[in-house]
Length: 344
Image (cartoon, rainbow, N blue to C red; front, side, top):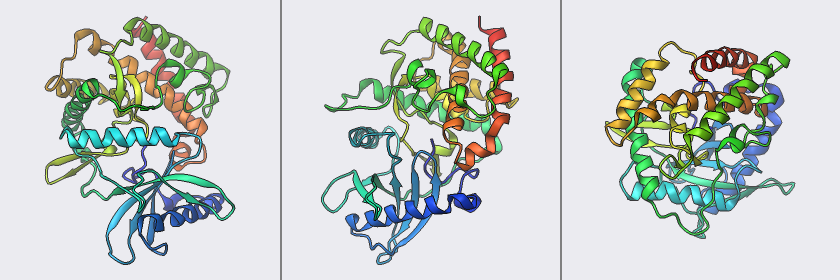
């Protein structure tokens, strides 16, 4: 999920008192990493976001320069997987496909460093350059989704052609990795407010999604390396130029899953059909999109929706999960009923 502080629903100011100890702990880990980059440990740290990871804006006490420090959540990505993410980020920038944040190496040249708590806990950290810009305005979502579709298509074209380096490894967002009992974000059955009736409705949805995804197929023309969190919140616009940020969830899935991730948390809004049409138009301006693929876009929207039910359940300590709560599950059941009536 997003780790850049651009989502107004997440932030330090709304953190409840029970989180104070964990936030202080994370800050100690972050500060311990700063000298590895030649940055004074007393430099200003501002918590931008805490989701999968904790992300801080750093202002160097000596130079005044800004950067972004990501403290990775333990147990989610290995050091090798993080290095693989950074390799794709660099390749996209070098090929001038999209602008991405440069990774700032530690003093020893490593791109993945570490920070430690005094009790011995160690976490992987990455330092990124600070990019200017802001999230695209939401006053014209339809137009913005056309831009998003075009950017997504360009990244997919690059992923299809890019010779991945040896040892490249990332999570798989296939059906088992997304909606299976041991999914990457846990099981949707553990989502907030999932009782017997909800489990029955969402279980029927999961079964239908599995059926349709199997029929759709996962050949290389449809399944490959994707960003996997292509929301407007992960675009920065500055002087007309667009940067793509937060590749923490990038991995292997259906290319069309990127559309589902673009609609995260807003799948129920009346404007969604228009957003899907606009995204598809933007995508087609860069790469082909068959009629069959367009017809199946709703499947990937519901795949993402059910995956977010799992995410909310396994991240109940985050502000975003608490703000969604049991209502997100209830609305998901309504959306599931509608989808099941249309896709048999």
